[in-house]
Length: 383
Image 1 (cartoon, rainbow, N blue to C red):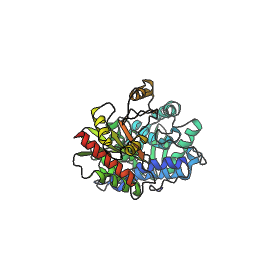
Image 2 (image 1 turned 135 degrees about the vertical axis):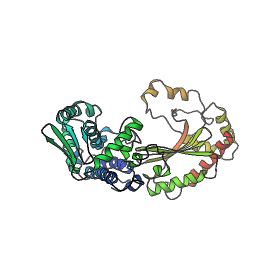
Image 3 (image 1 turned 90 degrees about the horizontal axis):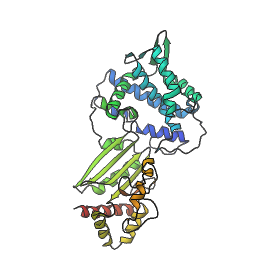
Image 4 (image 1 turned 60 degrees about the vertical axis):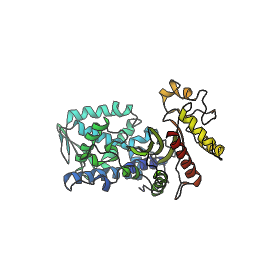
């Protein structure tokens, strides 16, 4: 699978790609690990995961997917139909939890405990989460486990779990699950080291994200765009830079005093940039508008900003129920203008655009100039 392409054969290909690029590169995630059993286990678990993704792509019907499916995929909010590609991760986590013996190269489980778990698995646990749509799909997923080496064998009163291709994967999986639960309370949270195979947390569980954690899933073109954006702010020593997230989404935020002014966002292949303005009906917002109106091209700048203001997409049921989005818009002027569309009330007043294939090699001079102008004005208003 090519991480630098965004030309997909199917929705499944797109979803698998978004999972694949989130995996921390093995040379990066094993830095500092000494050669030995743990290092070997990390390599085995990494190879097992990527082997499973590639096998799903080449033989989708073996995992209950329709290879001719052309339905669009909403990666942002997660299409549960495609979320089943991580079914095997839930299986491995559960098997480790119920195992009596958790060896580096096998798990040993009481047969009665195994049967009880399997019944719950089919009838309650993952059916509720819609990781499979019916029992026939579950059976396909279950039967697919040996395709990448995972074998579950019954021996009298005991059940033995091994991987005949990746013998020592269980040690690394066990340690990643432990850290994921310690940090997030569950294995599949965004940024979970179990989800993106970040083996660095095994020996450094308190490590904080660094610039490489934001950059590794980006394509070369996206990295070039990112570096150019960052260069715009390099000379402003008052700004603080902060990286958050990991896994399915990550952000690079630039702060001026107590405000997150610039927000660079990557999630499932979506690469976007937004700039925050002060909320309307505040002194900072009035000061910003005054500074803009002093410019010769003030109308053009306000047109540009207002055309790209973040519009409410009704993504939160709670927000819709309590009408928070309506209260935010009621009788308010944004940069001196009223709107007939609902402005998003979450994350502050922002204008944003997606950094797509048009932003390659060199950022549009218009965009670059507008960002510089806005940041300069905001800096003056915050001074």
